[in-house]
Length: 294
Image (cartoon, rainbow, N blue to C red; front, side):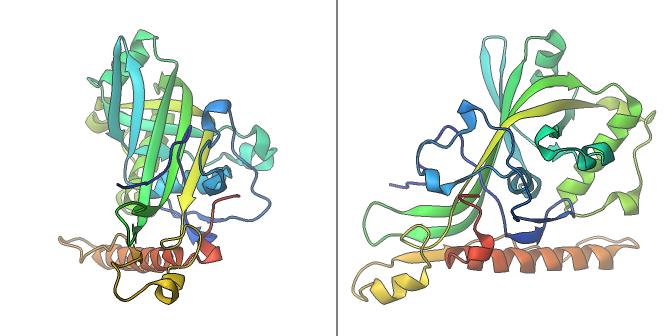
């Protein structure tokens, strides 16, 4: 039986102590980064030592995850759909203001025929959640129980959803989607959408504010939080394996043509190497990659 996350009000987690996020922004888990907004529904209930609430760490997990699962209620039906959840960078005014008062804003983009758009237009949707998980290792137990994953997960509790109608904001939101999904400043190569063009006009963008957030992380080998190297010393050669196998996204060679192929190759080679180092560090419980408890 896989004991992956334990039961919690929300599960979530994030990457290294200092690293470049999928959006191309560099962040650090230093003490000057305040916690994100918390509510009762975002507090970790089980394995509390794995939880973290620092806003930048949580948002970086969302940025790095290719997709989030967005859950909401449409009429009498509970819905859960995979979407890119694009995190809006703070404005200049927000960066200069007290971080506690900073509003986290995310954008969801989809077709106008989406049930989520219908729910927003009907005015019946007040709250929704977005959650994602990144697997960093497979944990092996010598017993039938206690197999698990090393992971980082994030949960955002969203409210005040609204359709973006301002053309300028919509263009900026679509650029955030492009840059986050590709993992670097792709807009520098392809430009911005024409606000009056078919693509921009035909794409629905929903703006949501983050009411609460939380993160959760497991590191180490068979014993959570302890290096998998310890398993080598403790394990009996005659037993089934105990330890962990690092997992990471390894990108291949670009297939296609264009003036920036070399740049694309460079970006994903760097990302692959960064992913490898982080995953290997996480199964070794390297403190540089620890987010839990922060």
